Image (cartoon, rainbow, N blue to C red):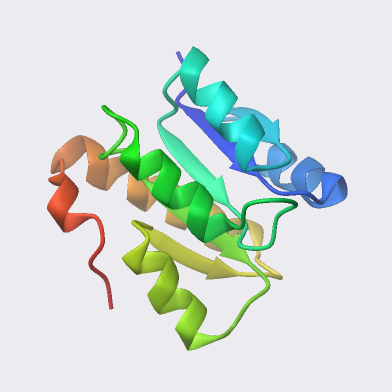
Length: 136
């Protein structure tokens, strides 16, 4: 069974590209906003969440906090993938519970390496919920 990745981004074209990169190895579920993410989390726990900062309704920071506040989801890696290159947004995403941060435009190899690293890290050394908010 392929690991499941929820990708939350309101740009369908970008989701299509990322899906084509991930699909050979991962099952991907495209979601357009935080509300769809919360609904999907009720049905299934993913192995990883890829989350944009700029979404319709709740932003990525709030979506991340909602995931982290859901019982049983504290160890699910959350990779922020956003156009924001602001250091403040990086810090805020890590404080919200993010596990990684990439900026758009992103290359295929860079994204796959980040996804592989986060999934491997989760399998090899589970982090406590207290460790999730850290980062450089």
